Length: 124
Image (cartoon, rainbow, N blue to C red):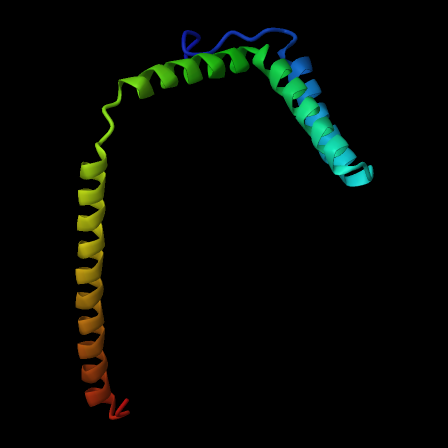
């Protein structure tokens, strides 16, 4: 790889990622070990998950991911989605094609079964 394609790295990124994984590990282990009521357990999982996500967002890779997500959302807004009628027609075509192919494969299977039965003499 050339130097231009590599992303710049912050010296604290490794520490931040270790902290993120430690928080996520704490979430899993804490959920397993501590017998808290459901509401408190869910709240602790959400809080630790948000804390891990916020710390991860401060890293170089996290900032790149956030930028990618923003650009993806912009691109999704540009998509021209099919109308309900187009979706229904396409779905109907797929269902009919699937049914026809199922019938063809069933027929082919029946013919091959008869041919094999004829040659092997099993008379299935």
